[in-house]
Image 1 (cartoon, helix red, strand yellow):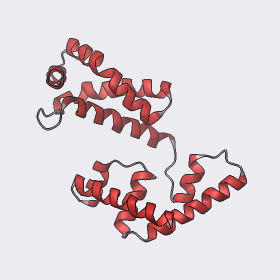
Image 2 (cartoon, one colour; image 1 turned 90 degrees about the vertical axis):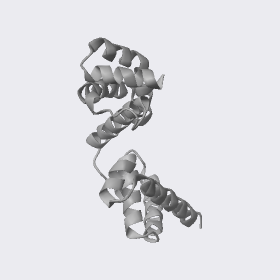
Image 3 (cartoon, rainbow, N blue to C red; image 1 turned 30 degrees about the horizontal axis):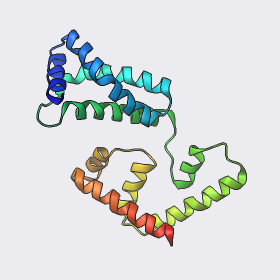
Image 4 (cartoon, helix red, strand yellow; image 1 turned 135 degrees about the vertical axis):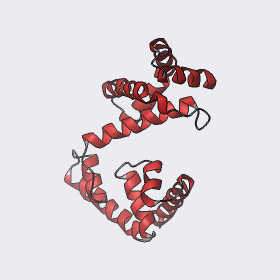
Length: 178
């Protein structure tokens, strides 16, 4: 199946419309699931999926066989596009309290106060992390940056960024449990 997808992508790069139709038939359920998981809203996911296939048509010539599997490459395009849709629809939170307010503006005052208190606890725990790790956590989980974007931003390898975030989340959990 993987080689079949890769061969279809190679044919799409040559502007083969029948290969594109076959690629869509074979991969759209999986890519729709990726979009739906991130966007939640079915109509928004359907629209995003169409835009994903426009990108695939335009970028098929950039796919490097052997560097990543065909389905992995397609899923990354879908995931990144869905994240871009989310970024475009909501303001970026400046801090944890803003993120809580953006996440659920329908809260009553008591719920909002409790959430703000929890936000301050998280900020206090973030202070215990090295500055670059704390900023990476905020950029990942408040602003929605991907591991790849964070690795480029901080000039570290991708696996290093994954390790930073995993260890930082463990430390945050330990701090919040105290």
